[in-house]
Amino acid sequence: MNIPLYYSWRNVWARKVTTLLTALGMALVVFVFASVLMLSEGLRQTLVATGSPDNVMVIRQGSETEVQSNIDRAEAALIESLPEIPYAGTGQKQVSSEALVLMVLDKRQDHKRSNVIIRGLSDAGIALRPQARLMAGRWFRAGASEIVAGIRVAEGFAGAGIGESLHFGLRDWQVVGVFDAGSTGFSSEIWSDVEQLMQAFRRNTYSAVLFRLPGESAFEAMKQRLEGDPRISVEAQRETRFYAEQSEQLATFLAILGVVLSSVFSLGAMIGALITLYGAVASRTREIGTLRALGFEPRSILTAFLLESLLVGMAGGVIGLGFAAGLQFITISTMNWQSFSELAFSFVLTPRIALQALLIAVLMGLLGGLLPALKAARMNVIEALRSA
Image 1 (cartoon, helix red, strand yellow):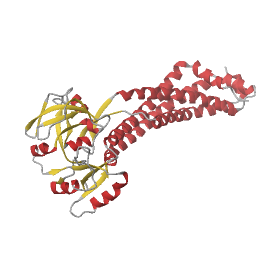
Image 2 (cartoon, rainbow, N blue to C red; image 1 turned 180 degrees about the vertical axis):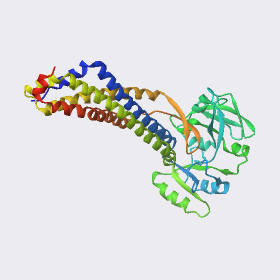
Image 3 (cartoon, helix red, strand yellow; image 1 turned 90 degrees about the vertical axis):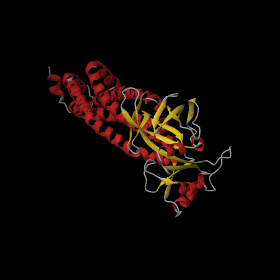
Image 4 (cartoon, rainbow, N blue to C red; image 1 turned 60 degrees about the vertical axis):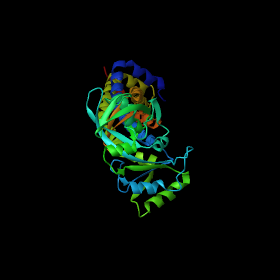
């Protein structure tokens, strides 16, 4: 005979305090595991969303980031002159030679200092990034010492709000606008006119050239043409792939950290489940003997106790995942190890992460309840009935 499922459910609720404490221990493991994976996923999605599949990023061959790259004006002119690059409706070619500078700015709250990317670009560069929407003020004017700040920079750094000013490159720059690029890395940047930025920092080279693809099938041909041209030493990537690679190092570190921390905490949670269920077996010795005397097989008793442990694990998983889901409303900042600049992003909970977290909870429940369940299933009927 099989023991009804209600039996396991009733026994879980009969020990509310110990069950809750065990479930909370498992919830902590699930919370840590899910939150670190959400952090890694948020970082990855932020950087991937920064790029557009229709854009091509061209940097110096051998460079890993725009900060490390330099393309001189002659090389940039050759790239801009590619006949395949389409024109916008305004008659302007959809290509932008850009320069990146890292500046140290003070934060508004604690006045700590952090690196911020200042990107010099043209009107075409703004048009190539349709995800960037002007929230207040206006865009910078070509030839003027004006800047527009991403919303994360405007909110987090002193002097970066609209109407304020920043001093760098031996001149003052007026903040004339604030833009929001959604959950992308651009929201953590400051933009200005590329020629003014290069003059201020006495630079003669660009960091990268960005242009719009004429069509989906044109990428490979244009890539081979650019990288095979002996007059220039560059490499071309789709913008989405370029920014995805920026996230790989930190995202991998966070994923490994999550696994290590969860493994350590899960040992404690499983020990807690082990102690709880061993106590349940000891307190229900006569009950187990009665079940055996009534004809219930050891396999049924094993299944009943494993089900109790599984229910505790699932409860912990749901609680931990619920707390982790609340992190999606929090935005944090960290150092982008590739560009050495501050990057703001949010926790992101995906169905895959939720499933993995619940599977961890189920696994902890099963492993924590296995030995007590085996003890209950192997208990001698006569000795169990004679127990006090």
